[in-house]
Image (cartoon, rainbow, N blue to C red; front, side):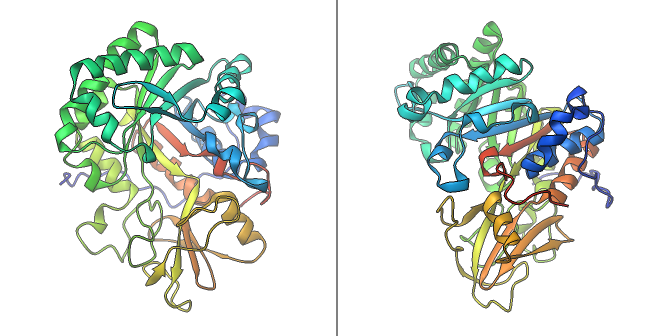
Amino acid sequence: MVADVQYARVSTSIPTVNVANRSALCQSTNFRSNMKCWLLLAAVFASACLLQVNSYRIVCYFANWAIYRSGNGKFQVGDINADLCTHHIYAFAGLNSDGEVLIRDQYVDIQYGGFADFNAMKNDHPNIVTMIAIGGGDAGTEAFTAIVNDAGKLNTFVDNIVNFISTYGFHGADIDWEFPTTNEKAGYVELLRLLRTKFDQNGYVLSAAVPGDYGSVANAYDISSVSQYVDFLNVMTYDMHGAWESATGENSPLYAGPADTTEYSKYQNVDYMMKFYINSGAAAEKLNLGVGAYGRTFTLADSSNNGVGAPISGAGDLGPYTGGEGSWNYNEICMMIGRGDLTEHWNDDQYSAYATGGDQWVGYDNVRAIGYKMQYIKDNGIGGAMVWTIDMDDFNNICGKEG
């Protein structure tokens, strides 16, 4: 359990999404002209501008598989607005049980120029940091476990990561092990310790993606030690609810809601998890609060009962661009709202949005919700925000400017 420490709850007056004084870019005509094309990412950036904190990190993941999406969902490196993020992370490189770092998609990453184009962004934007994420949700745990349980493989893996960064021109690496167990607790810390030593010798940046789920982190992470060795932690404060449950729920609620009456449901919000990391020894300034540019979908058991906590029969329909079960990208959600398929609602208790249409229900963050989260970051001394992933935003300006 985390100590019941009082942290600032955000003001009910949220930042307007416009530009102020973060840097020269905040004042630039170029930025203002691009705001409308990146609703969620622009909301993160513009809120940081308005809050006038130049040191905030805005860490943006790019999913290399977005190139395979259809129509307006297709996204590639050339579509990235590099100015809007301080750190850009390319997802993903793979790994095997021998400690090798693997190219996951030879066509996209090498032949199509994914790695080269991604790192070439630094030519015109010298202040950004480009990184490679290693692992990912579909990489499993077997290879990581084999590596950290063998000192020889562990040292080989660390050397291979350094070589991979150097070969392809990245500035650092993000370790995305989903997720170590109690048995790997010490091995995970040792991996980060060895990487820290090697990265310091080469001037590289080290980060790690860590769970936003209490059950995954509570007993498996030595949070204080993990925080010690990384430059920052990307806290995946989303997927709090989904169609694996029996009722509708927000993807990334800032606070607990009236329906969160069980002991476990009280953990399923951003506020609780950020407190947990800080109270467990993580430096607040090393934490990035995760923002999901997508929503979790549900099919209602009864379309007339469509609030938060309503019974469901399963996941929502497949999205038009992604075709993935249980989630819609933000560009899909806002398009469906715009053409009248969905009606947007605001959740006053949890500072989040949801939309309904017939028997379909989706919980997600809109611009208003992101404004509250950015205010929360400032109020609680958190180091920045992380966006998963920028290719799910309204980058083609299909939806236009949101309020």
